[in-house]
Image (tube, rainbow, N blue to C red; front, side, top):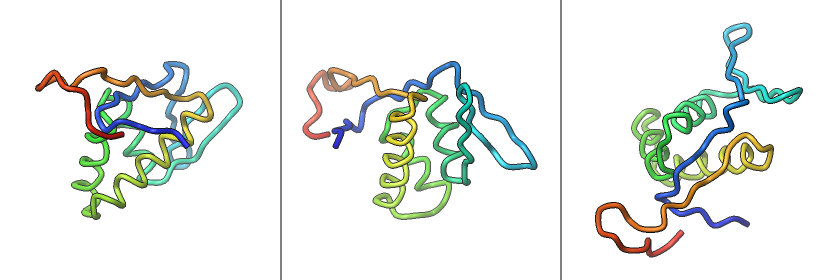
Length: 106
């Protein structure tokens, strides 16, 4: 299991391409294709914007009108799948930008 800090920034691999075929979104890296649902597509778009894990979950919560725990589970699950396939990685921010203190928990 991987610990992920809420203020970690998501970095997408520039080689991953998002394409639409038959009006359905796909991620493509070399010969690997991943079909995205509406959550996955929204998460990928947020990841490309360089948002934090927390920011992505909050955006999903607002966009889909779901509880935060569901948005967080969908976000982390999707990002872990993408990370395991080499499509993205996390960059931990060593300190909170506003307070200069280390985050309390992952």
